[in-house]
Image 1 (cartoon, one colour):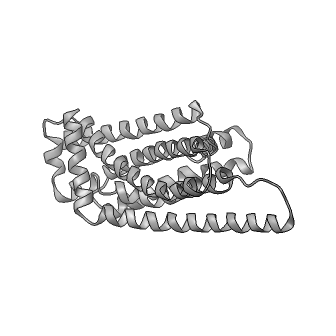
Image 2: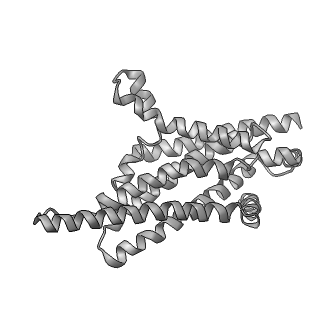
Image 3: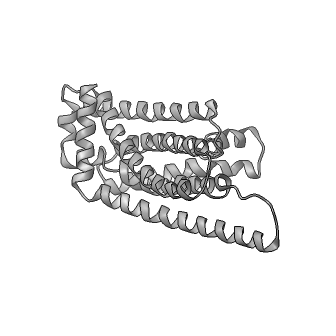
Length: 255
């Protein structure tokens, strides 16, 4: 555990010593801030129009603001996760330190978990930046916090899976741009697989739709903690890190 934490701290330090972490935090915060401002504006205008029409239909903050915004965060994460993971191992290979890492007394799984945890912590910081916007809803409104908490858990699990995929891809190349582009392509593919079920109900289409990361986020966005969806994300994280371990093993044998 000590080795994992040591690797994690080193990787986090490399994020925050360089402008990478600050740029990601700033851009993620600005993009989500615009989404939040826009969603809140639409909510207020709709409420005023309903009052002018004399309609008494209750406005739901969770359904009309929080749930769509959580889906927006999930989409924005597709663009930022490759930026987090593309340097994890690709930079080590480019600088030539991967040989030292592969032949060090630290076990492969400790290196992999340390780097993955560092990426997950940075992604969690991005999510916390978005949570600051929701504090205004609690200051001036009365939303239900439980669906919001479940939604953030879903974002964290989904992000963990995609980060594991990006970690594996980063072991395959020494070029960070290639690693980032490939990670984005795979993450986007895992997202759009759900579209197949919109026009085809065959078994293969259902299977592809089940493999989509967004299919398993819908329940979290509604505030429903479904065990099958949590198991899917955890299984994906395990498979991604397992593939990374096998890739690291091949690097160790070649070193």
